[in-house]
Structure formats: structure tokens, C-alpha cells
Image 1 (cartoon, helix red, strand yellow):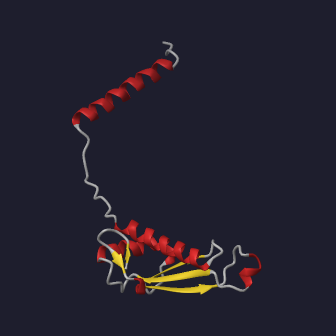
Image 2 (image 1 turned 90 degrees about the horizontal axis):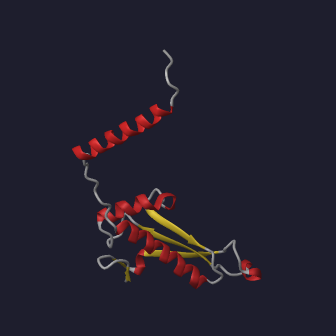
Image 3 (image 1 turned 135 degrees about the horizontal axis):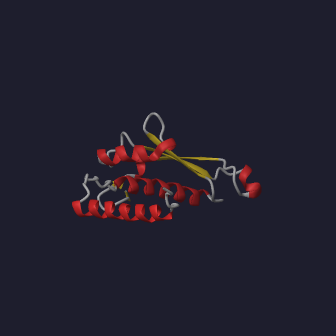
Length: 139
């Protein structure tokens, strides 16, 4: 089990990983070894995620989400397979942690009478300053 937050833990069997050839650094090794990792996590069918977290996660995933509700993350920045795997899993966990945070509900508020009066008074002062800059009207 991978502990994501105190209340959410994901079973390692829910994360599918496949290794492919990377296009980045690695010298001659890059042509021989499949060091890039592609991990897939099925959000829709994951028993570990609460429904509200899964919905937020699908919104956060953006273009990484397939039509089937699977998040695909590719990591190929590192030279070793192990480090790429760790990076990909960490990116997935960060995404889940971000989705686990409930957004605060905005409550509509109205300006107070005093704040309205202050705003109007400052507008009046500013208007007076600008009026004083104009040329006097010749009669």
C-alpha cells in the first residue's frame, strides 16, 4: 500500500507500469535499454479513492486522462529505470494529494454601508483634485 494522505492509501497493484525507450539522455545506453516508464492509474475503477476525490482528480489530470478514465504519466528525464519509476509515481501521488484538498466554498458577501461611504468620499475627493487641474472657464 502506498500512503497518499492520512485517509487515502492506494494499492500498488492499481498502478500499471510499462517501460519504453526514452528519447532523452543516456548516451549509447538509450538505444539498448527501456528506461522511460509509463504508468497508468484507473481513476474510475479505483476502490481506494473516495468519489469526490476521484472527480476532482479527473478534472486536474487534464490531457493526461484518457476517455476511459485512466491517468497516463510518462517519466523519461532520468537515465535509470528505477529513478524514472519513482518520479512517475511521485507525480501521480502529488496529483492525488492536490485532488484530496477540498476547495473552499465562497460565500457571497455584501459591502458594508461604511465601506460604500468611504469609497464614495474618496471618489469625490479625486473628482475635486481633477476638477482643480482644468482651466478656469472664461465668462
